[in-house]
Structure formats: structure tokens, C-alpha cells
Length: 181
Image 1 (tube, rainbow, N blue to C red):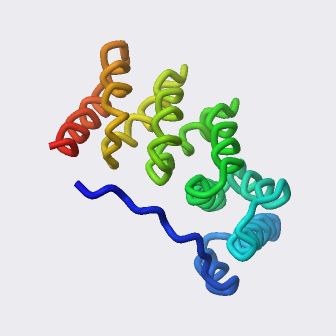
Image 2: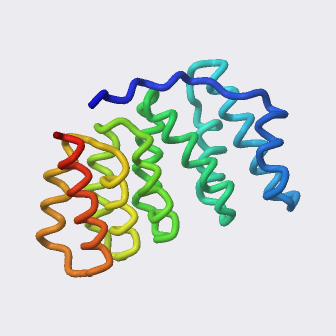
């Protein structure tokens, strides 16, 4: 199986990015978060560096109650994890957030990060107190092959008591076995 190559860091023009959300972002406050997020990512792409301000805009989107903005912020952070340690640190903080809905949203996004980022965070989220967060973390293993993930999934499978999570863990273990073959 071919390993995923490092993605190119680029963004679409601002107007194109805005148009992707025209049917789902309506309120002025959501539109403002959207604009700041897009502007921050475009700035990062042009300057090839992150700043506290650009990361703050992505975090604000990731913490937003709108699933569209939350997804945008987290997706952009996962892309940045391929290039910037600061993005990895930021994603790790979000994976420990007190809001289980945010942790649940972070988990499947980890499949877009390098194995060195994904595996430790999946391991942490598989030990989460909230069963839905554990289930979301297990989904990573059923969508992308990371060699280092199999022992993490197997270890959790042996300890997981919630049947809803065990089903997804088993699917993930099966997927990982197929990926190795």
C-alpha cells in the first residue's frame, strides 16, 4: 500500500472559499468567523508560517457551535499539522477540550494528519470518559491505515466495555489488518 504523500499547502482564492459556504453560513457573526478563518489560512499559505493570530482564528472556528465552521477550522488545522509543530500543539489542546462535542469532532479529523500526530491523539481519545468520543476516535482506524495504530486499537479493544465502541473498534482492527496485507 502506498503511503500518503505530504499535501501541498495552498488555498483557493478568497471569493471561491467564501462561495463554498454561501448556502450554510447566514448570520453576520458566523460570516465574520468564516472570513477571519479563511483570511488566516490564506495568510499562512502565502507567508509559509503560522502566528498566534492566525492559529487563534482557526481555533475560534474549531470551537464554534456551527458544525460548518467547526469542520473548517479543524480541517485547516489538520492540514497545517503536516508543516507546523504549532498546529500539532493546537490540535492536541483541542483534543483535550472540556467540551465532549469538540473532542468528538476532533477525533475523525485525525485521519488527515500524519501518523505521528494521529496515533498519540487517537490513543488519548480512545481513553476518553465519553463513549461517543471513543467511538469517534475508533473511526480513524477504519478509514486510514497507520501501522502504529494497530497496537493502540488492540489494546483498547481488550479494555473497552461499551458495545457501541467495541463494534467500531473491531471494524478498525479489521481495516488495519487489511491495510497491512
